[in-house]
Length: 408
Image (cartoon, rainbow, N blue to C red):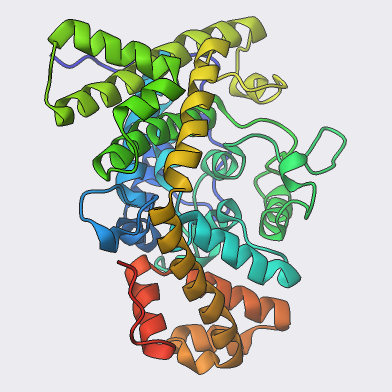
């Protein structure tokens, strides 16, 4: 028999006490406010596009590797498990997990890096800021407002799930030290401050947002290993030598089952990685939350440190996996070969659309011509390119630049 969800802890976000939405709406008789947020995200255009956006591999090279969508679904499952275990609002955690990658460009991080460099004279590009633009501006589906009109708690978690953006003194945190906090985030924070309340960029986000963020790390570790092994980019022995944690898990599998088919070993390894990380995060997070003595979500935000986290031992295991994957997978010669082609597509489409906005669809050409200055026009082009799927970007490049371009 399925068990009922546990009663919310006092430090959880409570949908019944949400700070509300920028545009006031009557409540739903059948869903909580956070459930409505989750459902709006799932039904958004940006969410559907994740099915054809790269995780690590360009999907055109294989049908079974992760895309942004499959990764997002896996993150949501892990976030729900963590939230249930910590008696958090798992609808909010799921909504944040489902939204966390909405702002990613085509071709994964290579697309983001290229677009950020191209947009540097106009304020840069950041995928978290782009996700905020999507859910507050660019989704144009509802009669009464642009965006999805999400609750303050979901917007806050989307912006701050990776931690504060400012120090208590108001300076940008190290991640943003070079170029400052992205302008779209600052602009929206000011809008919130005048209506439903500022996002408080110097504080941590809710425990639900932190659960979604650590779920992302867990999913990356387990599933990039799975994809890398099945793609033949590295072997189990390579991973085993690089990570004592993985070596321990593989020894467990061998002790329990003896000799197994490679595919079964890979699956057993992945499920054990997820289970160990979840169990560790639940224990460490419960300890940290107890140390704070938090009796409200506000006290979690004011705790001054991340409360949903790995223990030091498991944080070291996480680092060992990520260090190995960076070299063996993300910088593998075959992956880099495809990345270079993908980078060329973004690098050449951006200036082409700036010069010739008529090459974009009429809706985007109109937005470009209605923009007030060069920065606003460049942002329209960035929005258009960021929303492309891998396949659409490739086809546009073939149509406009090089009909022979091939990413295989």
